[in-house]
Length: 453
Image (tube, rainbow, N blue to C red; front, side, top):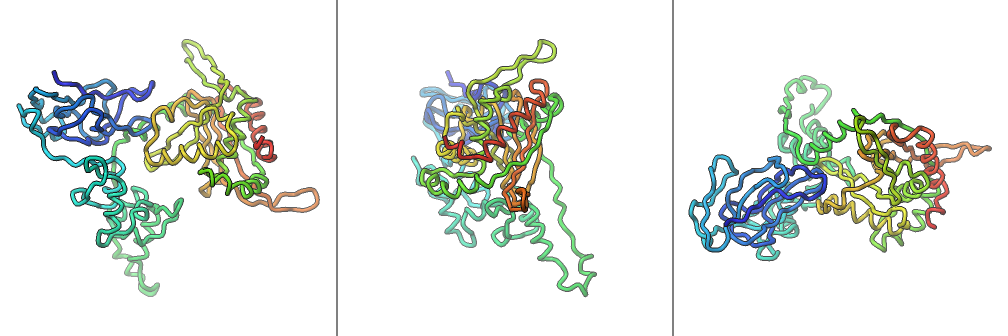
């Protein structure tokens, strides 16, 4: 009998998965354990492995299809069996011939998901790329080399520092992204950067020729697409959170001058250990310790108004650290954060952020957080409010640190000030409890030597 390939359940709370793309096509020979399908859950992107060796056929869903877990998505004909695709119109371009035997296969390139995405981003034809991986698999390095050596191409790293919206506008306006100065993090090109470049290219040569502006016609950039995968889940969960949770917001400013001093003194040693001593690390350390002392914030609110509410307080801190991606936000979790010193915390946060941006986080790495930290301090954002991620009862939003004049009793002196805002679920936490927690975070950060103990 053929072996079924089902939509797997990567996490306890997962109910469905979105098919990103098939890594193998109908009629391809696959080996047990080989990746055949790339799936996006509400948390991470994962590869589905072949449960048996044989011929893949009966591919029932195409890209962007949202499939409930345990649903049959394809079949594999094992040794000695023949196979026949079901109705071809109901599946994604199946190519297997009905009745084909196990020995008849067709050539198919094996490409890693990361390599595929890079190739699409920089316009590399994978048919021209020679794979250096196992069994000729095309890797990220292969595509990078091809992009660098291809005529007219620029290094992949430079091309990739652009948002999807920026790429779409650049294609429409025929603008070379390599010539656009990016204003985003690490020089990433934003949509407004490309629009500005387009205006500069077609703007009137002189203010004495205003009529030229009347002939400027921008191609229409309207587009519409369904939210799927992570973006769809974010939209659903945050809508439910905002509509159902009575948020209370408390804000304060924190003097980060001593943190900056300690970071300058310890930063090189932390980097030697493959960590990075960012403000997020200090804030995470202070938050974890404050949650131990104010554990009503380190909790989940469970139940409902019909069956009754119950609060589950946690003895250990599972601290979620929000990481921004092109298609949304992902929140990797630092387990037992209260037990980690500054160096260990810096290393773990750096590792999790790197895995998140590379799309390599496992499902277990993004579930079970008891409190979340969201830091936008790397942007010119002074302060903001964040929406609680249920069943958690609190989230801390962090703005940028900037120099401000502060009165010391005799004169004004420049101090590094950071604004933070706590969002708390008023059903589980009163204002005084939330204020005491926020005061504790402030006190720890303004005397950061105690965070090293």
